Image (cartoon, rainbow, N blue to C red; front, side):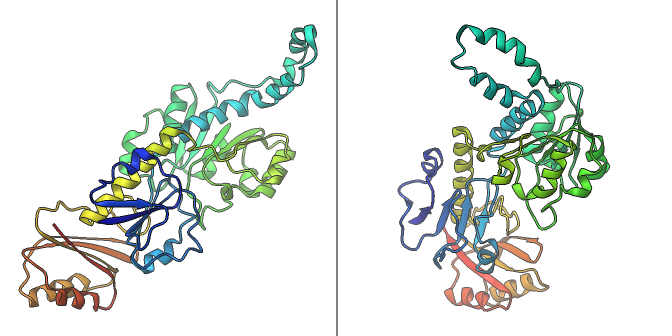
Length: 389
């Protein structure tokens, strides 16, 4: 019986995929095998020694102590792309709002309550204050061409925009999904200089923090509209406020406001609504649960932020999964232990990701606990688990 701890309310569409005859699921549970979480902060949490996996029902893992998990061999999953359509739709809404001054117009119209029969005349008189350009024919620059960025780029092409994108780490899988109408920018600076609208879709890392700053505002067109539905820290807010004041930035649309941004006239701020749709919550939960099940039952890894993807069909009776430091002769030492115990390997897969490696080894027959202990004792091994069927 596997034990699953939920640290937030997780969609039942996902949780019902855990078979009740083999899984116990609760928010308060002793010694869980895995944790499923949304936004709950695990940073200062005392994670039980029993935990083998943490599944984030969402893309960002800022609320999970990934380094601490990695040291203990805990696999951390996320669900990239599961909420992409929900975020994409909000980005498109922000695109129109930044252009047509819909929010100021809406607020002004609400202020006419009480004017009675004068409302139609006042509307016609005041509407010119809220005029704005159409997006058709304008240039949109997309920084980051993951699941969301590609969907935004493709839809913008269909809306008649001239779209260019930049992402030095775009996957082959994502590239296949990108419209031929999206042009490849030579670099971030070229994209910023040419675009009328800029939308950000990159993760927040040490390299991307504050990437939109004073130096980059200086090369933008006057009146550029910027959309940020990725992470607040991507934009230097102090530099942004100066760029708004001098007209370099015509509007800033974000899902990550702070008090200073809320005070700015040309900032359109949402309360982190990107993935706040029932469809996105269901999709994230389903993906998180399926990845957790596949790992617990078969040792397979897909969409981990700290370990390599590693999937192997399991047609035997005994499987060993091993996480270790990515150093020479690790596989040789492990297979040497098995050979010394006359254990035949029927299938083996080894993958690495940076300083870490992960192995799936299927063996014929039973595996003595003494052999498992010898593998655990190898210098550099972080985690060993035996799965029997």
